Image 1 (spheres, rainbow, N blue to C red):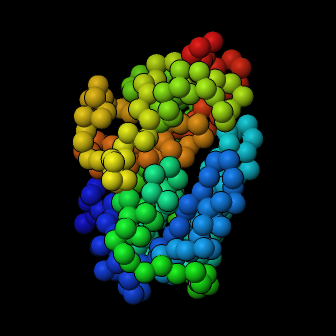
Image 2: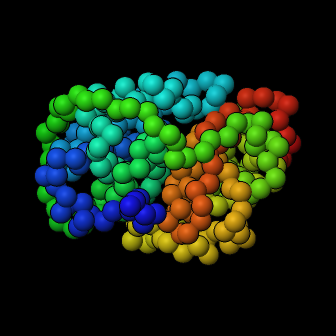
Length: 272
């Protein structure tokens, strides 16, 4: 039975799985300002047999009124998974550079399609390197398979549902962006009224690994109805994973997040 703690895996445990026929390793390194950086890093060095998954190309539709990283259709994503060699029997392990900024988007999207056996490499590629494990430069060619869409293990909400929400709304962006002092990504600064700021970087300890201390979500009761958002539905998934492994029920995701919210001038904002 899959347990919340199985959503994270150590470099040592992943190393022990190498060679397992059901294992698929996915490299999701990325950069918000340089869309090609992740693939360049992957090409230079990656975990053996890892495939590359682009946050911008593979895990999102083109930016528009639905936000900067709108979710693709489930059918399009399932087709991508099959072409990438990921089946319903696969144990997928996903990693990024180590700061947790991008890695949870793929973790969450697999759960969105009903796939439970997906783990985030705790500490990312940095933890793998620090453990002294081998790396590779060759790019594997996946064997295509079929991925069938299942019942979602996650929840999504629309902007209208956020507007009428009476639970807890958690914003994963940095405090300055939340307050509207330093907006570097979107055309309007601020946050959704009633939201609390819990930057995703608070989930990562000094060793680059997820902390499992529920105190970092102080003020959020375990039985709260929680919705997570961020700038575009990427780092909010980090908060979802962090809350899940800290003993909370899995929060819902507002996929469009702030970058969709501000596309409708009638939606309230702080500051106005």
